[in-house]
Image 1 (cartoon, helix red, strand yellow):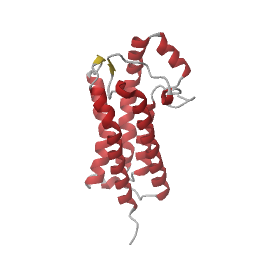
Image 2 (tube, one colour; image 1 turned 90 degrees about the vertical axis):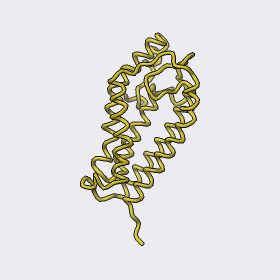
Image 3 (spheres, helix red, strand yellow; image 1 turned 90 degrees about the horizontal axis):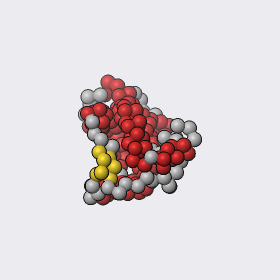
Image 4 (cartoon, helix red, strand yellow; image 1 turned 135 degrees about the horizontal axis):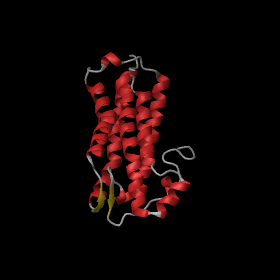
Length: 197
C-alpha cells in the first residue's frame, strides 16, 4: 500500500478547519453576549469579508471535495507538505493566543464592544494585529500544503484583500476610541511581524 500524499493534504486541511472552528466557537459565543458600542461594516468591508472567506475556505473546499480545479494540480511534495503542516499548527496556536487575550472584546469585523479595553499585553505586546498574523500564516500554510495552484494560493489573495482594505480603517477606529493610548501603542509595536512590519 502506497502513501497518498494528496489525500493526506486534504485530511490535514479538513482537520485544521475543524480545529480552527473549535477555537473560535467559545470566543464567538462570549463576544455575542457583549453589546457593540461601535460598528463599521460598509459595503467595502462586507465585500472584503466575502473575498477572504472564499480564498481561505471555499476555494480550497472546492478543490478537496470536487474535481473542478484538478487541472491546476501539481505533484505533491513531502517537504512542502511538512512546511505547510507546521505553518498551520503555528496558525492554530496564534489563533488560540489571540482569542484568549481578547476575550469578549473579540469581533470578526470592525466592532467595538461596550466597555472595550485596549489589549496590549501577551501576544499583543509586540504586534497590534496578531490575529491578522494568524490569517497570513493560514494563507501561507495553504500555499505550501495544498498541491493546487488555485486552491493553494487563494488564501493569500483572499485574506490579502481583506487585510489591505481593513487594517487602516481598524487602526483609525482604535485611534478615535483610545486616542493617545493607541498612538503610544502604535509607536512601540508593529502591525503583524515583530520588529519588521
